[in-house]
Image (tube, rainbow, N blue to C red):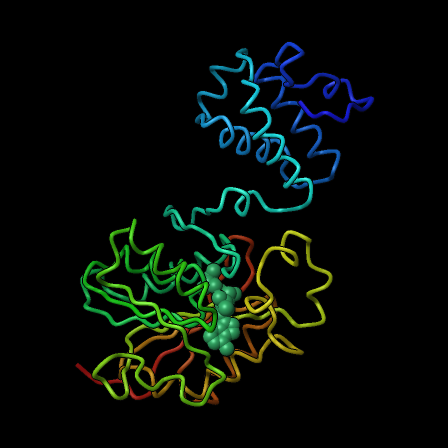
Length: 316
Ligand SMILES: C[S@@+](CC[C@H](N)C(=O)[O-])C[C@H]1O[C@@H](n2cnc3c(N)ncnc32)[C@H](O)[C@@H]1O
């Protein structure tokens, strides 16, 4: 399959037209072996996904057609994808898409690759809100739009606004809303919450808009930790989506005092946090005058989001 032959027996043939083509099954094993040799996390899974993409075959068809030859053109396409993965580009970036909350999101260079752990935010928001409530939802640092669009997909009477400092992210989020049929209920605007006037004109015709649910997965990696992250992250996720200042809490410090003025009287806040940050973020919310509702853990048992609500609740 690849042109640079090595002593690895699985790599001693390739898909060039002057040699008999390898079968789908053999190429798949060969790619998995190359990815494993490069110490990538999930070589077999990555090999299957890249092959399916290059050959335009489903997982089942890869199995049932395992003894079929790999067409030369597809072999070349596949090799280009494998080279990218060996350079530590994540499979989601190579494919340009990521599944989140069982929905399909197109990625852009300016968007974070959504992480499964962030589904904890969606779960928590859904648990706090009735299905048919006509909610107004704000998503701070929307990236691909995954949090807002996932919640809107489960709350048919709700509408939402996603903001991001990155115009590329805003465009990507808006594009993601369309195939999900959510264009009418989701709006995305470029705003930088470090700017003093970022809230002005946020919702047309409403001077001081308030929201029933405020979601956020702000950048929270301590700056000093970033160089030690996996190349998949440091090379392919935008720095603006990661860098949270010296202790990772800059965005929470900036946003927490503004939340009471953005919440409806019964409004709730669901913020994702990094490892070990939950207690400090809860304290920032309380200092801002919110009532902390606790934390939710992700599938790894790590406190992944902090919940709070407006302290000035309306009764009845
Ligand atoms: C960790 S990513 C989260 C993206 C998406 N919500 C998700 O969960 O996958 C943080 C996002 O916040 C945005 N961001 C960072 N600083 C910002 C700021 N000052 N104002 C607005 N957005 C900001 C970044 O561009 C990035 O899209």
